Image (cartoon, rainbow, N blue to C red):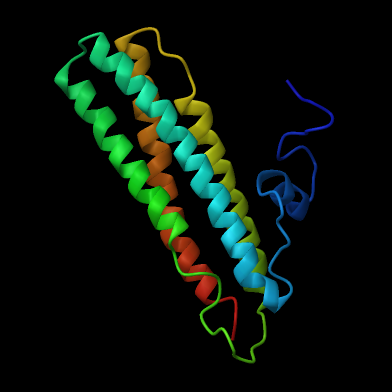
Length: 173
């Protein structure tokens, strides 16, 4: 269901507008002195989203333990919690923006657009993870389905986070 004051990403908005919806305070990478600050804003918002999913998974873990589910299910939830926590910290503590702090450089606009699209995909991926982990399971089968989907999304995020560092290093020349 769509809220006109808060449209869903992908509803005909421009790339920059979509990024503004997912990352409050997003200013883009156009001004070189803002690249590092914008990168920090993106990473902090991604971090908060990952931590939200961690809270949801801890709730699922409580359900799994209290219902005396199989050890396999308990282990899967524990591994996923550890994996997301590790990703959240990696996201939060990644090197800021461009490498040279006091360096004259030219921003590559084509790479910059690739970075904007990548940031949007990362934000959408964290939103998908939040939507998945916030589901309320009523059975062990529901929990297994949630874990299957969350594990798939986390694997995508891990790949995109590695790719983000590679793209970001190509923004400046």
